[in-house]
Amino acid sequence: MPVNNFPFHPDPNDLFTNQTFFAEAQAEFDANRTGPLTIASGNCAAFLPLGVIAPNAFQRIADRYELQDPAAYLPAGTDSTVVDGYQAQKRALARAMRSPGSAFYNLFLTGSSQAGNAVFLHPLSRGTVTVNPANPYFAQPLVDYRALSNPADGDVLVEFTRFTRKYFLNTSLRQYAPAELWPGANVTAPADLVAALRDRLIPSTFHPIGTAAMMPRRLGGVVDENLLVYGVSGLSVVDASVFPDLPGAYTQQTVYAVAEKVSCRDMTVDPPLTSDRLPTSSRQERERDFRFICITYTKVLSSRI
Image (cartoon, rainbow, N blue to C red; front, side, top):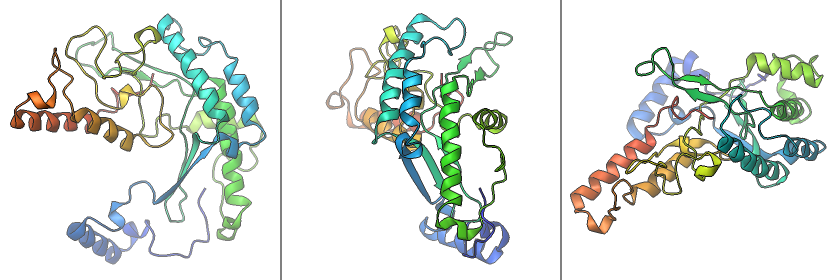
């Protein structure tokens, strides 16, 4: 929701319109790695629980979601272990919906006339990543996010829309003349809001996860608590794909945390080699390699299922 009365400068848009400001920002970044060019999507953010976003509706949404048949909105033919795993996730997610300490809503702001985006931190729908049967060895996998396939996502996003409107229109932010460009202030009915969201929703927001979930094998998991792949000797997966659900935050720092933990030990040799049994040079090389693997993960292979 952009604002029409934003008198503050410099702002991020000035990097594109003010060559002097851009040159100063570039010089600061080159010299110190500081300044405006270090800002990515925004420079502040809020992470809020569902109870704050929808105080009159969060309990009803959680109750309705918790009563769902776990297989009802999963892809047809989903393996029974994956269905069992989603049932376990569903119980945890319903608890999180009711918790004042679990963030569901994220709003990041850019410090400019262009407001940031609202992010759904715990989507409830599940998609698929499959081999392309027409070219299984060389083609990209087929990714289907199946966004909004679970109606509970629509229930949550309707409340997100209502809250975001109140945040911009019913607070002191009104003085900056916010203007709703989409879906439009006249779109208020839940069914109409969900239909509008289906047309414009970005399904991943750069945070895809879950294709190699760290869960028990009986619940559809791919890796164990040591990130070792079930049924394969000496193979680990160390990236965002091991997260069964999104954290109530962005994935980058969580991937860094996993990478740091794994880099301190060796899990790929059977029997495992501990760091005290490795020569110093070998240990340093393995830590370097693990850091590279963890931090440089591919988005497609980390897409959520």
